[in-house]
Length: 246
Image 1 (cartoon, rainbow, N blue to C red):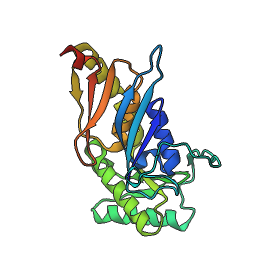
Image 2 (cartoon, rainbow, N blue to C red):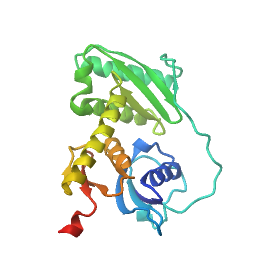
Image 3 (cartoon, one colour):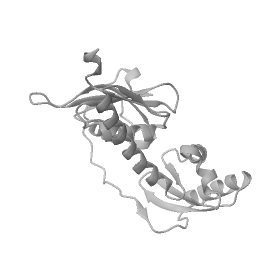
Image 4 (cartoon, rainbow, N blue to C red):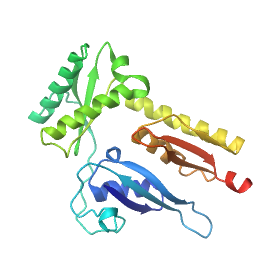
């Protein structure tokens, strides 16, 4: 399904989408439709289009159903939930089934691993994989880890927990990857401002692309957009004035 949302910044629009749809921020893909930077006599404005195949909260109107997904709706605010760390043992049947599924899957791949709970959050479960073969399980740019995570979420849906998002991590790869992408975004932005041209980044998953967009959103003379088809699209970072200079 496709939905559209608006906000003063990209982060505000994404936060509104997650709240309206009842989804985690890494549970949908985002396409930037329109961006207006804030100035002396105008306010910032961002319009996004959200693509998701996940079940959404009742009342969210899809674009192709004639609804206005950006309209504010009145409802009771939900308490904000923070990740809970510290207890690696499964606390319920669902957690144990996910752990057993991942351990069995990795074993059938020919590797040994210890699988445990990393954190718990509202509608999200973090799973930690410890293995002597972690580098293989993570893969280049985390693609193997992403594939394993996809299988874990498909399995969660098949056992009736479509509402839960499973996040896999190994060797703190997710945190290290996020820090690396933020550094990359700023480095590329500097190169774009110097050259007054554009740079096309490597194909990335939706979460990584969104991090690049958000990191560079407040740099006045730099813009970003996603290009390509499928899950792994590329982010182009370009100088805002390049089109006017040609």
